[in-house]
Length: 139
Image (cartoon, rainbow, N blue to C red; front, side, top):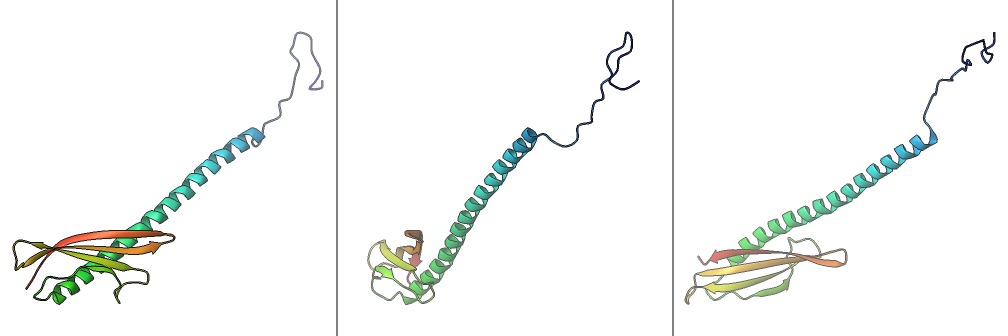
């Protein structure tokens, strides 16, 4: 008897082929999930790169500020120190400038000054800056 024939009182015999592989809908859903995941990863990489650059800029300016403050302290004479604006420094990378302001602490003749150093640089089309404050004692 053939597979498609009937016998008395029995149900038809039908061969069921085994399903192998995925349907088109399953593949499309998997690709959509993969695309969303890859897009998220690329967004995180972009954010991570920006954050890393900002951290490197902050580290560089902190090191420059320490160097600058040490030099300002050595150069401090007997008179009141003068404020500095848009100055460059040979140890700074190109495009970096600084301002330094001094505020006398206590009565004259002052021995202590509040010092604010602001370092600026260009990042693309924007001007970025970091500000550092300390107290400097005259020796």
